[in-house]
Image (cartoon, rainbow, N blue to C red; front, side, top):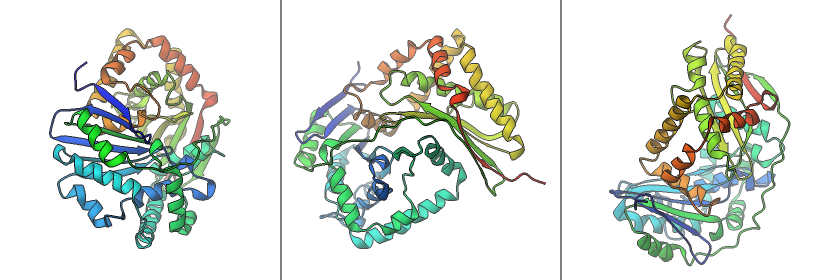
Length: 415
């Protein structure tokens, strides 16, 4: 295995997991992920994980908001963050000589944020605007609402942003308490891809993170128990009808995950030659947009098929989707079809990882689930072993019509 593929790992004495991959070049990428997200919130805490993701950039014991935002930006770097249903992540890209600066900044904002009241009030307005903007974009909103449908009565069904009522009421005490309960070293993974040796990266990790302490709440997530499939239709004033259909799939650590990724890529992945795109958009011209996705969480997963269609084409489009699902359940891929599908996925993964950041974010999340993190050659070797029978078996288990849930934002037909 080349040095460019070698992934090195360690754990600091305080529990922070360290992951590193050397990569030649001028650019380095750094990410710190905390194993806390929306599903770790109580009902009256919905939105707090996302709120904290915003507020860690608003002031520390050493830096004001301006200095945090300028630290890497002034040297041409890029600093950002995101919150998911299970993780919160801070990440940055920068020239390799600034990694010391980036490590210092990450440790400061994660462990020393002061959450000043004046910044909290300003950021409330930003998040409330974000919630309203999301509501005004049905093509985005429908994905979260679909997960609310299939994960109903469980934390995974809530919205990451929270609600207007809850976000409006949060005070600094709520932020400080949630941060103290969840931002502990043994909940964190720190990862780097860049032109720095593993030994030098470990020296910086020890310098800035080894003395950080904290005690998190006992890590207990309420497991998800499958609900029966459901269908919901809402009338909307938009011209376009938005449809999401799908159901439950495999969790992150399931050995069938890679097979599901390949199957989803054939069905409706990012390529223009997917079955859904060729047979619904290109052949019939029904869908303005049509795609499928597979999402894997720690104890469950789901697949979704999204399409934006003219209201008059809604029913026909849905039946055509079912037809494509049925083909995958009843017709094995030929040798050439399977070979081409594997080559396409390998190429997409390689292209996606070219910048380094996508590769890093995949690597840092894997740190929560896997003792050994796969390299691209190892993933390719596993992919090559997948057979047409494997995909047929998965399709029959996942795509059964009786297991499909459906959410429709029905647009207005022209008169």
